Length: 493
Image (cartoon, rainbow, N blue to C red):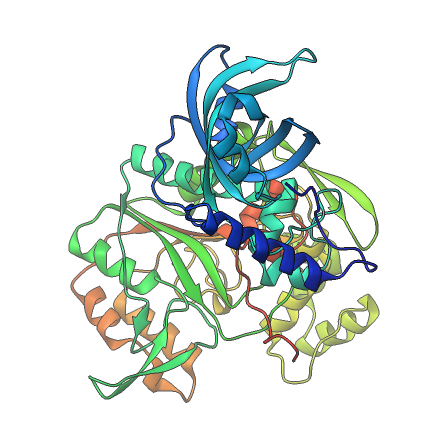
């Protein structure tokens, strides 16, 4: 058996590949299928190590990730996504025939082990092999066990190599799987029904974003990948669902950045007879629940790779809540809202906030908010009552008709979740959508407006960007580190 990992510059990769091919042929000559078949297990490597008991008969399977060859006796690590366990293989114990097959194996190969648990003299939980089964021969060397995959292109394009070699990546994606399952459980226990709504839509709605376009040949019609499930979930409120949610895949044909991927995961939930304040309570409780259960508490450390500075996000409750107008005034001057539109533009120049000539006045204020408030907010803050032009699907505030009853949850300089008191007046909704569509009036979802005319109960609604939430909770620096297969340019472009 070889203990090679990754060829150095001085080594010939072709020679290593040839050696593995020769071992493949040797296994076949021994009458062994190098790619195995069914193998029943009693434990996974990680489960066995975590709940270890001595002198227990076990069957485990996994990939060989480390090897210490001592002649007729070998120690090796067998691993999968949940962890590893040490295996002791002895020539006499498994017999000459199996030993001959075993010696054709390398780091990276998948094997099945039948044996008995024991603890070594140095206290390492282990399994003494009575039988070894070849399950899959790896024809290429594994990444270095010391450095893992360090090239970002390989890390994201060949995620399987990243998962094999980087414990940090395995930890992030294990936590993501666990937390997504917990979100479902949490909402289910609070009486929310999980549903599925169309990903192909003839009118993309629920957000202001550029959709991906496609063509349905059988129906001879243009269609779009959804940018949000909101308008269909609200149809279900009309139909009598009082609490409903969807963990959905949505798509936006826009830029790619550290916090943006064109295909992303989002939670949307709607609660009849509730408002945005209750939805904020729900989100605060959910995120704190996840942090306490999977992150060791309410203090989350984040390392900024560019500045090489570690900061701590404090999720301790209660989270701050403050009106949008107050926060903008604190950042841009107490007289901000008393200035003329031209005065606000001049103030932006003084503040160093870049704006473009074609921006509407409310967009100028939003730019100030994003640069001077949002990007500088580390601990959680619910920003409430934003300008109505920014959120056409939310209910207008009864005391100030220039704002709507919403929150935007900001953590670590990014929006994690918006929440609304949902607009359910079909006439006002039509006006809002027409204002948003401008000359492209054909983009209004008339079927949604028709549904509202049948009566939608007052409701609170939320959206949570799951990818951004996972970045925040795991300390990941980029959205690509929490998405298994992020979108990339074609190789070589």
